[in-house]
Image (cartoon, rainbow, N blue to C red; front, top):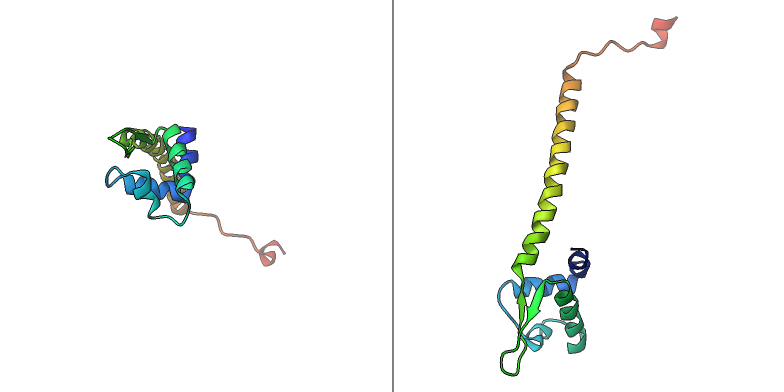
Length: 115
């Protein structure tokens, strides 16, 4: 999971994942969209592949990249778990703050009251 999040930290790789969510693409098809060398895009694909986010197969002379949606599902499940926990904490905090706002407070003492 750490490799997947590290791979997605790069905006170019996130964009590649977005493009592959539409359909499989070859290295040259992906490289058309970036102002970097084919070798640089190839390295991005390697990082995504090592992270388990994409796979590449052989079709004749090409190696199309394929998005591994199941891996994205694992990441989503992990994020949603911690999102629910955070939302539960915020709900408890909201309830506590609401309770504090409903509780009457004693009047504040001023310097005149103390004299």
